[in-house]
Amino acid sequence: MDWGIINSFVYFLANHTEIKITTMDTELEFAVPPKTRGRELFLQISRNLGLRETWFFGLMYKGANNEEIWFDSSKKSVNDIKFNARNLKYRVKYFPEDIGQELIEDTTIRYFYLQARSGILSDQIYCPPETSVLLASYAAQERYGDYNPKAHQNGIFRKEKLLPERVFQQHTMKREIWENNVLKMWQKHTGMLTEDAMIEYLKLAQNLEMFGVSYFEISNKKGTHLLLGVSALGLNIYKLEDKLNPIIAFPWSEISNINFKGIKFTIRPSDKESKMFIFYANDAFVNKHILNLSIGNHSMYVRRRKKDTLEVQQMKAKAAEQRKYKLEQRAKLLHEMLAREQAEKRENEYQNQIQVLKLEVERKHANLLEAQRTITQLQEQLRELQIAKQQLELQQNELKTMMERLEHSKHMEEKERRKLEDEIKLKQEEVQQIQNEVEVRNEETRLLQQKIEEANRREEQLRMEQEALQLEHERNKELEAVPNGSNVELPSLVEVNEQLKEDLLLLQQQLEQTRLENKQTEMDKIHRENIASGRDKYKTLNAIRKGNTVRRVDMFENM
Image (cartoon, rainbow, N blue to C red):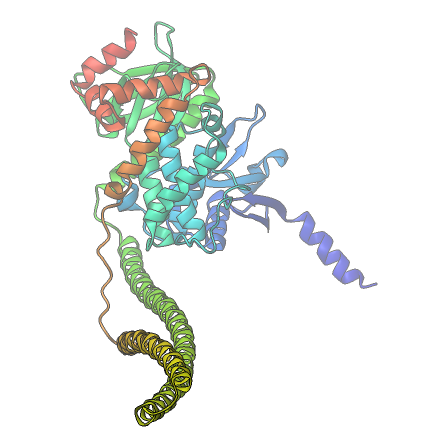
């Protein structure tokens, strides 16, 4: 036993702290010296995850009352993390004002997407049913790529969490119908990059009223219980029963100082004429949490309005270059897929044409056999006709001989003469019968000859049609091999919103007919009232920001 190695291992354990990090899609474990600063630990985790836009993220853990607490990495060291709180979560802490413009790298986009999707599916972020279906279609594009009817059969979503459970419970529609609606919208995203699908998801999610908002219970000087919402846009005040519609808003541009003492939280507006904006939390710890988020969001708000740092400029340039490359590769792939589909289509057409030709050949072969049988029959009839004609000629000769005998037998006895006349009469009847038979055979031969001529005409027509089909087949075969470098332009993509409008309208009609009113939450009712009134997240914010800070502070104090 090597005691040196064992002692080194014991020393390592004694002088390192085990930290477990959980992200939205993985788990990491770190053994770091206890004196490691929180900032150093955070950057080490970020490097391991490949995240460079670290200003959006933070570390959080569960408190004694199961509340989520942001770890202040700027001040604390690993040694300050309590033993029961050493399971940290790496999460989005600060949200952009405009997702589409601010997120740069694919890894950042992915972590935002995973966190937003988790929040929506778990109902932490309220999402109306029709929007949740559209979001699910982008999630399908992100996970599976372009819809492929051969690979993506019905039931592909059966084993995954597709929509918030609330949505299923509030309507009588079967899951298969929900899935079919998602499938129809998913098909409209063909050609969309994975990163673009996540961005489109986040753009829709950003329109949701609760997206990127942290809520805290507070009260004003009169003791009225309210909610404070901290977001990238500023501080909003809500009624307890309505997290969707703020009633008072204070943009970060109107705030010059933030501080708290105990449960009292004080905000100094930029407007010198306005008095302090003061509210009270349930305990000082909540105020500390509000202060941490408020200072960070305010800092981000100011940062966005400054020129990008050199690091950010480089990141944007590299991301633009990578996106251009991906788009080129995607276009190349779509071109190859389209060429392959066209080749397969032509191949199927050729196979169908070959099958048609085979059927034509078989039909012509059958016609040929029928014609051969007809010709054989005609030849047999001709032979029989020839024999009949020979018999007729023979009988006519015999009749002629008999007539000559009659002519030369004028001096015959009466009895012999009558006998000869009877024989001649019988012979004449026999000749007439044979003559009639010859005429019938002649008519049959004429009709058969017409039939053969008609068959020959049909055969010639079929031959010409076959040659035409074969010529068309050969002409199409020439198009099958497209020379390299040929310009095969893809159709221009229609705006996604335009493509999906009809599907969303049909879905909304389905929802109206299948909605269970007794299952509707207050959020659902408020959302429908907003839609009926033409309100949305940004219209509401614009409306409640009107007027000066003085008036809005007074409104808050008088609630």
